[in-house]
Amino acid sequence: MSPSFAIGIDIGGTSTKIGIVDHSGKVICQDTLVTNTFSSVDLFIDSLYNKIVPMIQQVGGIDTIIGIGVGAPNGNIYSGAIEYAPNLQWKGIIPLASFIQIKFGLPTTLTNDANAAALGEMMYGATKNVPHFIMITLGTGVGSGIVIDGKIVVGHDGFAGELGHTIIRHDGRLHIGTGMRGSVESYASATGVINTALEFLNIQPEKASLLRNYAPESLTSKDIYTCAMQGDDIAKEVFEFTGKILGEALSNFVMFSSPEVIVLFGGLTNAGALIMTPTKFHLEKNLLPIFKNKIKLVFSELNESDAAIIGASALAWEK
Image (cartoon, rainbow, N blue to C red; front, side, top):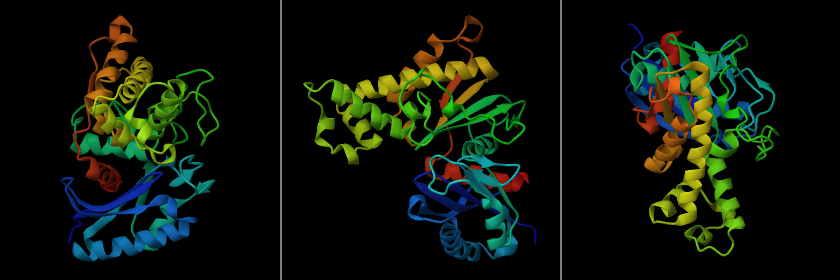
């Protein structure tokens, strides 16, 4: 019997999504883990195993599974290791693909989480038959997958394309995880949006805002969106500023690789026009004439709750 399914595992700084996917990109079953509750990678893998084994039985047993694909922060497709991921509490070099392959007895491929998302989009989403595009993931961090001539760019060491850690504001906001200042991720991630909101509240202490009803330590990007949709001026300013930063960054990326499409994916895209409108404006504003009005800026066509799993599972089919 030919294998009919692949396992996709997407590891994020906050949560890990797992699922079994068929060859058409349909998620058959899925579940989640809270990533940052596991002090060691061994405990994490044990919990993965306990979640996934019943799923495997549900689809007909291990012979129906072609393999496992893993998308992870700082995942190296060459080594199968997570290397010095700033948004994970497991530090150093973690040979995760090897650990998972031994635990499950299935071929396992690991890559950067944003590269996995780009592969999923290329196989099943907005960039089918598009040989030149960039995928930007806007979640706890800012990831990126760069596709040129139909191939994901990984570089000589597996780490090419870390656009989220490029500097967009010289000597700007401190990124706690890396110690760098002014990176795209420190502004355009969900965490960055929260930090921007807190800064704007502090520098406008006399200005009324619905955001002041939230405790700073519990404020989320979803709260900021909710307030913006209710007409809150500071909340709307937060998204205008975030879109400005992101648009400027994307203009740099365009002039580097001249993509046909830029796909935005992740929780922050739920803000819709609040993030898309200023991002598109500042992208076009900062392009050279030869690049203007050529780039399609779109949201991912994949269902957000499924996309990360689909992208990771695509690695197993590609292997």
